[in-house]
Image (cartoon, rainbow, N blue to C red):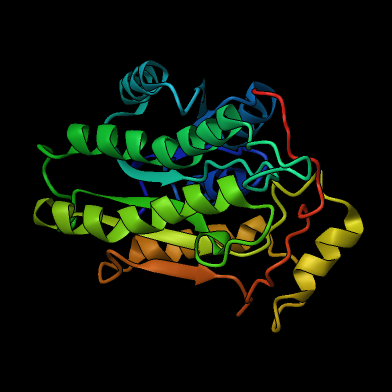
Length: 266
C-alpha cells in the first residue's frame, strides 16, 4: 500500500513510538491524526507535522468513537491505523506483604493495553469494510505488543498479560479480515526509549539495552517507525507478529521485581 495521500490514525504515546510514527507517515505524504491523552505533546507533534490531534481515552469506547468521527470529518476515511498504546506499571502477583495485587491496577493495564488495541481495531474496520480498495487493499492495522508478552518477568504481571493478549489477537483478526483486504500485523518490541521507560533509573535502562546482543542499547522510536513503513508497503505481511528486539531474551528477574506493588488504583 502506498502511503502518499492516505488518511492515517496513530494512537497512544505521542512522545515515543507514536510520535516517531506520525512524523514518518506525514513525511511520506499521509494526513495524520494523533489519538492520545497527553494533549501538550500530541498538539505539539500535530503542529510540527501539519496533522490533527484528538484527546482520546483509548480505554473508553465513547471517547474512541467520537475521535474516529472527528478524524474522518477532517481527513476522510482512514486507511492506516497504528496503535502504540501501552502502560507498564511494575507489579508482582502478590506483594512482599503477601497481600493480593491491586486489582484495579491490573484492570487498568488490560483496559489500556489490550482493550485499547481491540476497540480502535474494531471501529476502524467497521468504517473501512465497505470502502473501495486502493491498490488492491482496503487498509492496514499495525498494533504494538512487546517481548514481555512472550517472556514476562517477575514484576511484569500486568504488562506481560496485556501484551500477550495483543499477540493472540493478531492472527485471529488477520484471518477474519483477509477476505475484506484489510491486513493486521503486530510489532513486538524489546527495550525502547519510550514514556514507559523514562521513569526507570538510568542504570536499569542501560542494563535493559545491553540485553540486546546486537544493538547493545535501547531501541529508538525512529526504528519502530521505519518498520511500520516497511510493513505498510509489503502486502505479504499479514497475521505476523514481528519482533523488533535485537535478539533479546529477557531474564526472569525484572527491573521492578523488588518494588512495593500495592499501588493505589489510578
